[in-house]
Length: 248
Image 1 (cartoon, one colour):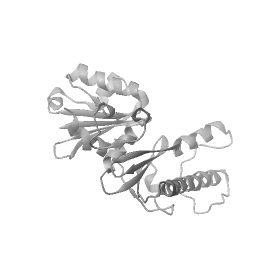
Image 2 (cartoon, helix red, strand yellow):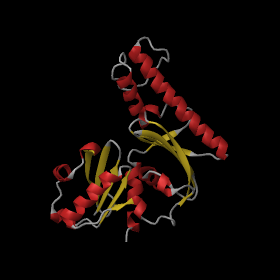
Image 3 (tube, one colour):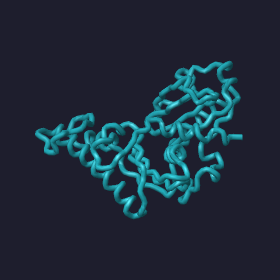
């Protein structure tokens, strides 16, 4: 069995796979609650189960949280945890930027789609909205924009007359009240941002791309831009699963 984890700023996904890459168990944890007791309570793995796990691989954008998982598995079960950037990936992907400057989640996303025939732009709707550019087996770099949810919450917390709002699609661009005006601004504003960045990347690189959406707001924006995009929800996990065999 393989245990794979994706540590994000908001939540942690833990997925247990068998050798046929079939999901046996999936667990979600809150990143800001991570400590040894919380991990133990949520994961509930016994020694018999852990003995069957051959490899453990994480991607993490919160190093201190990865360290807590690494300590937990080593102390409780004598199992070694790896972080994606611990692996030598030169034979799979050529990184044209400083590897230390790429979030592990973005690297995992790129590994999930990489092949030697197609080019990809991956748009990940997380705490930040990120764009990653993969040309065949080369990672060229990307774009980081403020996350939709984070920006919406920041506006609500800073502007006293704007309540907490859940984002949804507004058919009418012109809002008739505060809530519909804010929804329209965020929805159509981000739709324009996404479409424009994709077009600029294509224009400046002089290449065509397949567009992949992943993360929480993928389906909300998929049909509101003039670019065809497909959705892959667990892209980061799939990227980690793809390279776990490289752990010696």
